[in-house]
Image (cartoon, rainbow, N blue to C red; front, side, top):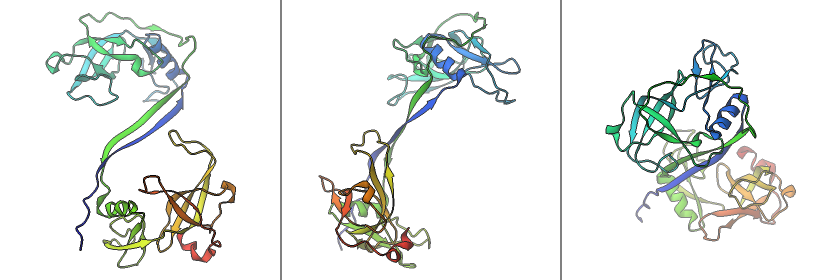
Length: 317
């Protein structure tokens, strides 16, 4: 018996842009940062909250009374970051700090530029260092920096009015981690590199799982028997995609389907090509078209066979 393949490991990035519109309070706050102005909001009990919120966290009352705060403040707590990561405010070691800006009753989280942890302490005075280019985002505050001064800023009312206000933001969500597919899916991926699709059969219910999971989720027993399936299969259900995804070089509309490969006990996902999107249908017989490097099916195309009878795949919907 050949030795089991080494379990795969690879860096994986999950990233998508989150787009949201802003209400009057958040719009004023972010537009103010662009104009080097920090705004808070006064809550029902008189406390000034920053970043401002649109509803009182205690009474749920709508809040609209904006006040201008100072650009200096006091560190209330901190933690040293010796190894900054990509996308963090500073590329050199810095401190994460909670800063209570002059005139505020709550603290703002940001980075403090300091030479080392010995230079940071609770109660130290700091000021905002503004970014050279500001767009209406929290990154318009480049960081905080030490600044010896007494607290002397008095809050004053602000109507939140600016020229060309920021009305929406796009916040990228990103997760970087190392992914290991485990024994079962490692074997599955190695088989794909040989243009084969391999699943695992449950010894109890005999269902063949593709991709394999290493265990049967229904019976709760380990699966180790390898079963080659396909390469042809049947479209069980599908959807028409009309919104073009970022960084995906596929013209819309296109079809994404559940495909039950011959011999498999459940359907997997795949794109359908080689046929107009409005001609894809349940029961359509398809076969894989492999990627240029031959590592995985790029999409599935019609085989030209007669459509499968509904009874042949109804249990796989």
